[in-house]
Length: 494
Ligand SMILES: [Zn+2]
Image 1 (cartoon, rainbow, N blue to C red):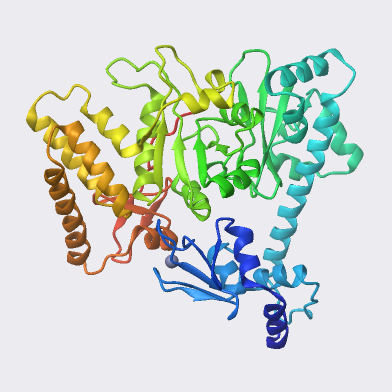
Image 2: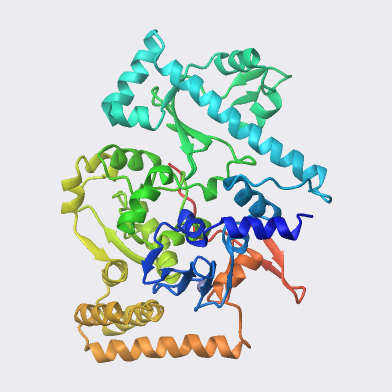
């Protein structure tokens, strides 16, 4: 146990506003207090208040409050001892040895995680050296990288080169690094037969995937041969969870804290293009669709989310290409989670993506932007001729309008959408009010059902239209019913 007087000393040394603003850069001063959107519940109007004079925070929306330690445990996933140690380290306070320390297993897991992060950092230094090596393959790789992203970006993002053969194995041997951890990190693989070990990356450009705090979590590696896959990602490990990775966040979070805007693009190459031309608030998932977990991580920036879809040819029988379909699905989730969502759709007959199309900030500027709901309504109306079909679309859109909290924005949307549907604003307003009422009744008839946010935090899933969604798990509820959980939306791989 950590003694009470130590905890008091740590809290005395800590300024609550410093701790909160480190994780929520959007925290803004208002008089004697600070305000931002709550990291613990979904909202658009800030109700999370930090009071320096009391060294406490309180949310007027979800009524949770506390001090610097509870902030770290409740919003940053730290355990109590972790939070205390984190703050103690910052202020140079030593904690007397725990009498009931973490279990041996916890300690060894933590050590393993740290060792893995440190190996990734070191091996990335090795990859960087290899990119500058004096041989034909490395020169080709360096030339390619600089042509594509410019020297400044290549250096800043610490892009490297993996020659293959036994380069990583030999490097690790010299350093005395265990093959066990290299296998776990996916840097080396075991051959199909027997025990032979091989480098995983072979003649590839290596792009480190970094956390917000610049830790190297894994790699995405591009080949030059044209063979598939073009980009090879690290496999999932204790430090690398693909469905939680936000590529580009190490750069994007600072820019987004300033502009309160993220550009959401389809893949790492799109992020690299945008960031290399100075548009730093670009992010992407890693070869799959956006997940609820990723949106939750973005919430603390209180951002507008601007999707820039890939423009692909629709498959036979489909109205839209895969890029547009992916943005419709992800946009609905983000909108319903309370984000302000907009779309910039490139107007092109040809297949293009942000990587191939946006070669300067002014090109990005010129792409028209639209509120997601309006954009979505336009898509839904394509090919709908009859009054009943159009009324059906209007009801669908009204359901989404029902979750819009910003009254001014709602008014504007209703006015514009009514025009689109060829109806009066009051008609659409009524439909929206009906949908709001429906939501309230549904909630009360279920006896105060838990909100999505609570459901997700407690059990890791969401409910939509009587269906449960999570990340590919099967769970049993408190009544003993087994709920089949499926992916929220289909994955798209690059
Ligand atoms: Zn709250």
